[in-house]
Length: 128
Image (cartoon, rainbow, N blue to C red; front, side, top):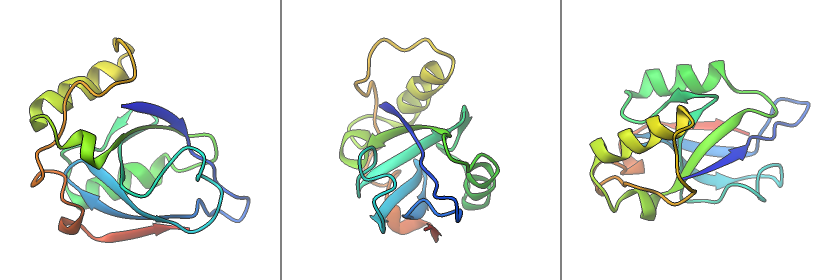
């Protein structure tokens, strides 16, 4: 897991096309250069500004992300491939530790099984 800073243009766009998944928000595409230095297609945003997105239903993910969506917001992100290597409950614990400041490093301690992080499960939410 890594922490990155969200960049939002003055017009309100972040250049992100995302879909919800059990892991949070899956980055489907980057439509401008605002966040290309910190995010990649295939990343999963598991938290924003200390708000857990992992394991929430589609509406809750959208609500929490939208409420914390601003230029400079802190995101906790992992790659989909990396997140799929450990069970969901272990990933949740790792994310909570990171959010509480108890992490020991930037490597993922746990990951989602493929079914838990499948980006095809949720709705597409463009933040572009």
